[in-house]
View (cartoon, rainbow, N blue to C red):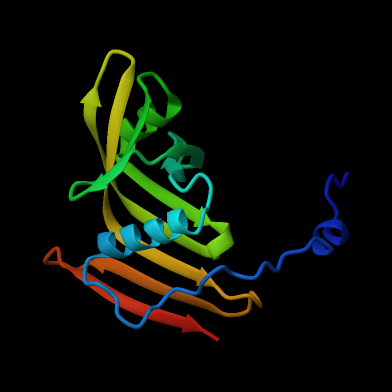
Length: 170
């Protein structure tokens, strides 16, 4: 049984002109600075739910699990979000400490993916505050024709410093 056909989905409008292309000429050495710049660009452009992020974890069977959360703040420790005390997310984070975040600001056609290690900052009776300390960033910009993308990847080297790779797909 087909619930959403390939033809139906294929006929949907997919091209939306971007509000503004990012300037990838001068990139900071710290990916947190670029994230803050893109986040502010999204706020300034009037994007709704800028702080919404998909938080991905891994369950006990090794299967990915994702849900939408709100970013509470970003500091030198990492990306902070809150959650209830007894959730599948908390159990998964306690078992693996691995987490990934994905931000998608559609009107800007920009996405940021962050992978890292999670740790609990506040262990309350009903509320937990978690922080994902990033080890990998991927900044993604999708051009209008969907055939061209620009990506900037930051990852920590063996000494803990950020290395940057810029990829342009033409």
